[in-house]
Length: 150
Image 1 (cartoon, rainbow, N blue to C red):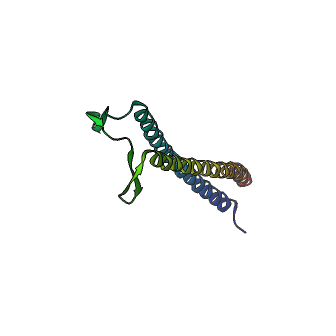
Image 2 (image 1 turned 30 degrees about the vertical axis):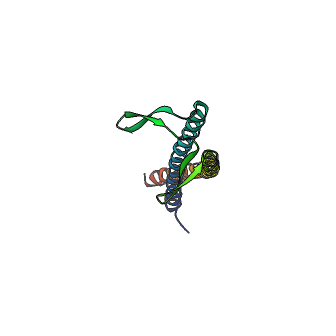
Image 3 (image 1 turned 90 degrees about the vertical axis):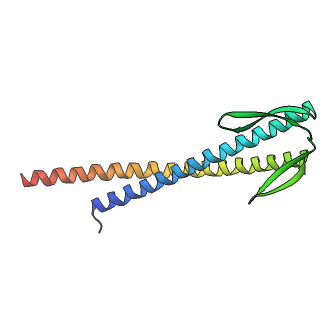
C-alpha cells in the first residue's frame, strides 16, 4: 500500500499538470481572440471602404507605427489567404464570407477550449481538496509520531 506521502506527491503532480494544461488552453484562447479581432477589423474595413466607394484614400501601416498614404482603386476583388502562402482572388462578398466563416470557426474553437478549461478547473479544485486533506492527515501523523517519541 502506498504511503500517505506518495499519495500526496501524486496528487500534487497531477494538479500541477492540470494547471499547465489550463494555462496552455488560456494561451490558445488569447491567440484565437487576437485572430478574431483581426478578422473583425478586416471585415469592418471592407464594409467601410464599400460604403465610401472606389478611389478612397487610406493609410497603410508599414511597421514601427509608421504609415503611408494609398488609394484603393478596386473594391470588387479581395486577395484571400488560404494558408501555406497561397492567396486566392475572390469577389468582395465571397472574401467577406470566407472571413466570416473563419471567425465562426475561431469562435467555436474558443468555446470548446473554454468548456475544457471549466472541466479541468473542476478537476483541479477536487485535487486541491484532496491535496489539502492529505497534507492535513500527514501533518497529524507527523505530530502523533513526534508525541510518541517524546
